[in-house]
Length: 461
Ligand SMILES: Cc1cc2nc3c(=O)[nH]c(=O)nc-3n(C[C@H](O)[C@H](O)[C@H](O)COP(=O)(O)OP(=O)(O)OC[C@H]3O[C@@H](n4cnc5c(N)ncnc54)[C@H](O)[C@@H]3O)c2cc1C
Ligand code: FES
Ligand code: FES
Image 1: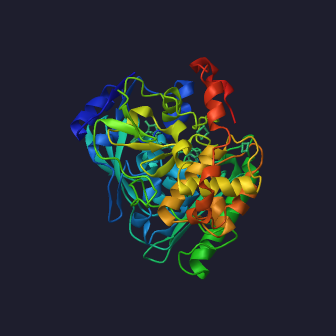
Image 2: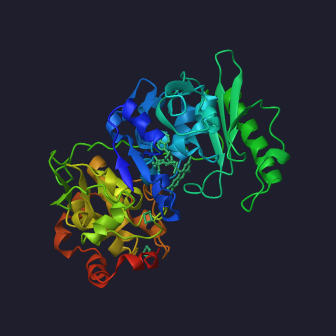
Image 3: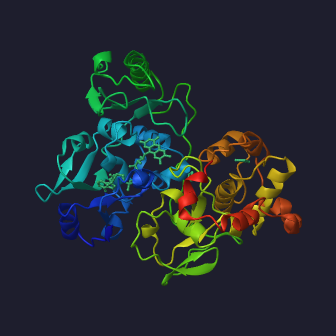
């Protein structure tokens, strides 16, 4: 396995031509790593300055959580972003990774296509950089790299998806409708087709064109698609222009992005640039990149940070959540090769020693909302990171549920947790400082010491 770090577009072109696959966030790559889906050579795009979002133009390396400002006036795109995965995944996956994966079930390309967005692509076949419709990506024959996306003009629009699960399962059918300057409506449908497609609202693909699989029949998808298109067009025609309508809950806020959000008194600080990564306050040499498919989760556990639990290893369960430069992320989806000198990683072990962590643990313990405790460290990190930015947890139970959306509790305790965590503030439990401890982190450290790489699949949620 070779990891290339091209510094300019010319070097990227050479990397693509040598067979390297681009590395965006790593969510798709890491969850596929065990199926041997990584290329032998991987090109980390992190050095190309593609992580900026300015005036409706978004670099390929921008994570979805950081698109909010660029989406202003483009509600269809904003809603598609908010519908993608859960908050922890949105902090990881990048605009380029979502487009580059060319998944027929991805949310963002559907909204981009309806919005008239264009994608700047380096095509290794002819060596040129071209502006394409997002839909053209599906027809590119050879390797390519998305460089940036122009989101198109601001316009009223809506995005609707239908899925078996609100936050995690991919869409069965998705629809974006955007009003054009001439008053017409551009509609793009996705998820039910092998690739997204622009359609006339009164000429939708028939059941014979739609996917028919174990998740839904083509006929069912067809009926849902008709309903979603009708509802989206009606919302644009009769509802407040471009505002979400219908039974769905309003999209959750997109978050502040990966930069350290101004530390609170007891919060994490952005690590000073140096030669090390700082994990729970301990400096560790930056991994040398020789094993890029190793995940941050296992790297942490291999270095003794056993408060990090590993469950699904595909970004779904949230057990492995750590704070990376102040942002909670599922560490199983962070390629360890993406760590940079100066990065700061905090696990639940550190958070448990801070007032924010003590407040969360106290509330959970008091309500007996913890059973086996496997999910608790991840929940603690998500709550602690939120408190660092906002002072206390949201008072609204639905907002807490959004906060916990990336966490699964196999003991079923998160409903109780969402209830008791409402409005919890570090100041509430300051006097309880001595009583706090993570339920099982230390015990797990002991029992896991003998756990080798071969045992990893047995540590499941
Ligand atoms: C738990 C979970 C839930 C998810 N839910 C949703 C969802 O609801 N809706 C949805 O749309 N998606 C969802 N996804 C899928 C996610 O959008 C894709 O996995 C996405 O590709 C990840 O982006 P990344 O930046 O992590 O890309 P990577 O993992 O780095 O790359 C994914 C693919 O894109 C290629 N690639 C990366 N960057 C570029 C680039 N700049 N140019 C060209 N190719 C590139 C890679 O070579 C690879 O083939 C979910 C993923 C997870 C793990
Ligand atoms: S989300 Fe990482 S182990 Fe489940
Ligand atoms: S308490 Fe057991 S997984 Fe949540």
